[in-house]
Length: 447
Image (cartoon, rainbow, N blue to C red; front, side):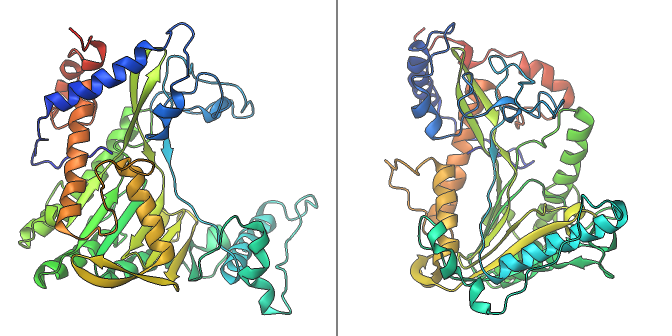
């Protein structure tokens, strides 16, 4: 886990001994590999956590599945089994995505949404082409046919019982509706307003807030909920996981998206951080933004890459969540632009836990998902030598430990790889000088 620090320039705790110690451990693994043969005997250990950034022997990522959007955009997609980048020179960009499977009535709603979209485009584009038939929804004489018990034979484990609501962003052009539907945005705003303890968000974008060019209200909903927590002296946390850089290979696109993301978070009087500070709220006590990186060994050299967060997930209080296809931006949320789908989940099966020294009820499904994600990001899903407990995301102990681990990881990546983005580079004119600095990964740790 890595974190982009805010514009105040807060520096990471300097732990050079920690950096050298980890580098020597990795260097030993590199020396076991023959750079010419690219031995991957160590790969299972290296790739357990974090995810792999290389696959020279086509074991996991075939053809164009081995990709890096920062290096090159996709091309010749009809030849999907052929490589389009040199996997012995270019690291892959790991993706982090979250999704879910639903059964029952909500699955029927999802199917009918597909049928609705199919039929409107059939009527507009292929009305007289019989190879594209109109679709009709299946009828159910018995509602019990939709019960999850009829699907258990297909499942590896017992499913969770939840209340689920299908939501979407659609309009006349995308779905043939007479009005614009923005129920995904409405669900986000409602869930944020209902939050009592914490909010956890993973998203590919965070473009929101008060701006003449931006109209979705997610940023304002977060601002209002944090302000309420501060006014009422409540412990309340917001964790937001984003890509460290937008997934484009052209500077103009990267800079444009970064501009709007930073305007949403910290830049300008109408950004979330500046509005909170103006209201007397210390943002870091309530909200933090994080990103992720991975490292590996490619052809005998230590390499790293950003883990591209592509999820569209929000978990609230370990009791409710929304997951789907919608980014936090106007394209996905306003309804009259991109068509999107999502599912709002309310847990029905609960269990007892502790949040900030108070006993609370959480949902079995939502809490298990959130804990798995936290363990993955902290690198403790298989081994937890420091006994980090992820059950309570609200307490000061966990919240600031989570932030501290991110700072330390940021320091390690900067010391070893001189990664970007970094607080060490404040201007574009500083990039070349920064990139030319000798990197710890290129040195012999025993000298």
